[in-house]
Image 1 (cartoon, one colour):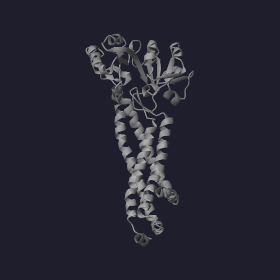
Image 2 (cartoon, one colour):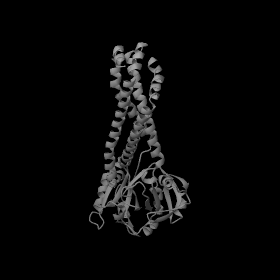
Image 3 (spheres, rainbow, N blue to C red):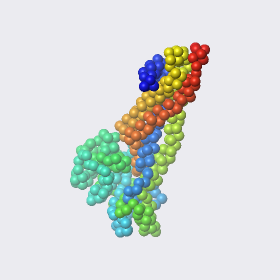
Image 4 (cartoon, one colour):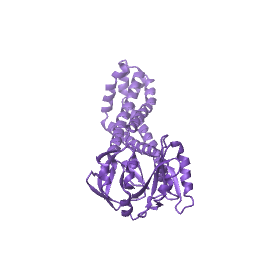
Length: 385
């Protein structure tokens, strides 16, 4: 119990140097804020691009095309794709975006046939405002993802315009799928006629294909591409998450580079804690001598140094981690490229990981000063005063 009774004393030591403690805590908080933000981005990229065992969706795109504006496929491909063995359903989709580059605020419109809207809604999608019937009965109606609605501060009954498209908000969809929570679903004929780029009438951007078993993904994709290999508009078919990773390749590479910043943030935390502990040990040599005179063992004094390093790192890490989590949670940051959306992860586990790493680094940074102090005798401490 004596190892716990010294905690109030350690906290008083930290308060005795308010300027140094404040600067150290601020530096750690900033570093951990950067670390958690970077890890949120990397986690979001992983969630959007990592294949799962129950993946059953294929995306049929125009071969050698990337931006939705350049992918043009005849809508009559739908029937030919539907006739391929293993295909359960086919949904022709027109994609219209404000730009194809990497951006944090791109509105993605998806044109869906009215009779296919139930298939186009996210698997976990819930209509929280309006109804599907409201959408079906308005040619300019839109089912807006909740993320987009919160980012643009729109609600059911509002009108909003983006990328040259003006729509009426007929319903709002709540879902955890990044591709759906940040998109607006509109009726296909409306978007085909409203969006001049990408053609009108019988031209679509892509087909979303559902297969009856995840093990058939590769074989069905090959059959689709073989069927149109010699047509005027050859196709390239990928599993949905592989398609997202391919389209958002720049964002994926950016997340990998950002990992270096995360390591730099951790190095900064270690350096800040180590510097704070070393300065504290140097300033309190007299106090340590007095403690030993009063009967404190060297290991107990070393334990106090360990607690101080851990406390500084934990407080700073907590402030930075919580600030980053709240920023991501309420900022609704979404990176969009070529019509696909990657959302920064809002899971608390990312912030918890950052706080735990900060605590571990704080303990590690205090180990050497604590061991050195534990082996110091009273005479050497008094000579240093």
